[in-house]
Length: 270
Length: 262
Figure 1 (tube, each protein chain N blue to C red):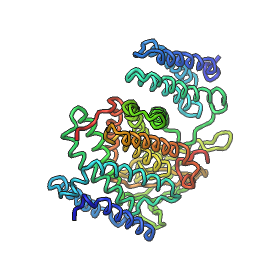
Figure 2: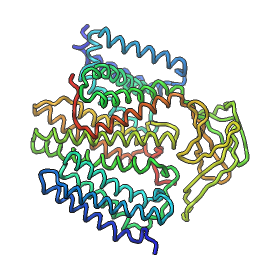
Figure 3: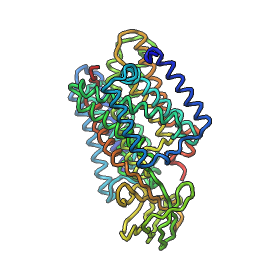
Figure 4: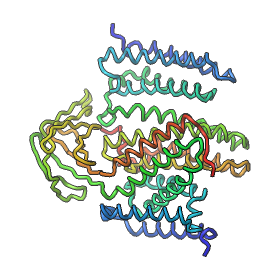
């Protein structure tokens, strides 16, 4: 069967199948793919990309490197954005969204490999933009199962090592958090203008306020997410070990975007 | 007498007049005009002097209230317009930047109560001003590109693509900077760079459509150019959803970007 000839038929069948499954199943439980399974799957995907690139599994490789695949990637991005943007509870782990991101990531990786050779004159910009986006998308996609969020409510002077996940399960953090002091400020209309807390995390003092979390070890940040009640704080602990990769991706993409603004339209020879 | 907001209504019009004069001079000269640049820079200096004075009077950086934030928008708008004019010589860009800066200046003059209106804690961030002003400027560039695309579509002009492409590169570059500064801010505020919040999802859709436009191969056929213009217009409509349209959707109720409910 010639894949290139029947590509639109295949794409349509896959799209219909995914949407059908998504209407039946609420979404994939991504926690099942936590480390080390996500790393194994990421390596498997990288092998697939290398296979497509080196051996050019004829039709599939050619299609994934085609201008059509580029258009499909952007259209998928727009569709995913519009669908999730209109859902009251965005189903970010639906099969359709996962497939769309994986398709985009695969195409992006392949054209980055090709573009590196051809991007004369704009090689830095091309590399920063495309590699930055691969890192950002890749870390967000493959690292999502390792993101872990728990919360604890503390009164002033209280300490605890037990926090609760979003599903309500109690977990031992392995260290204690103590709320030493909590301060709130309000304007004349009674609106909250500032929240600040002094906490002791695993024996070390730290200050928490909105936009200023505290760090604890590799990839862990501690936030205050108060609703403004006096003498009381909700502390959120977020483990996101892949966020360093995301940060590198953001910095690269930022530099590329500034170059895009400064250099204007110059394109890669295909 | 303390020199602060009480003199803003006298200082800001001077900046607006200087900037408007620069914009008019730029429009009347086919080549890049150093007089236009000089007038625009003078407007920025006037506004910058006011910011410096306000900073000195308040004894803190003017970054805390709605009025102070809008003051920064107007300054950044003038800076971005002048830089773009000087760098790429878009003759009409100074008109847009002057108009947008004037809107923020007028709000500050006509609504003095916002000078003391404190920002809610989530908005008190160093990322706030770069994030919003970069977005505002990218919207104006993308808006110009869309107007040209509309003109191309209605008048069946095929030769506008080069100019639109230049505007799109500038606009998308800044839009990307806006999204990424927002992501960095979101990590500090809410613990995630990206969470597919309604506003973020519409931003991704907008980004995807504008990127689609600049990735379309240049072809001289009428059909290809009509498709190009149509995509630019569709992307700009999506941008309107991202900017304010999303607030009218049910998904906005759960959005962390809803700041008017405290």
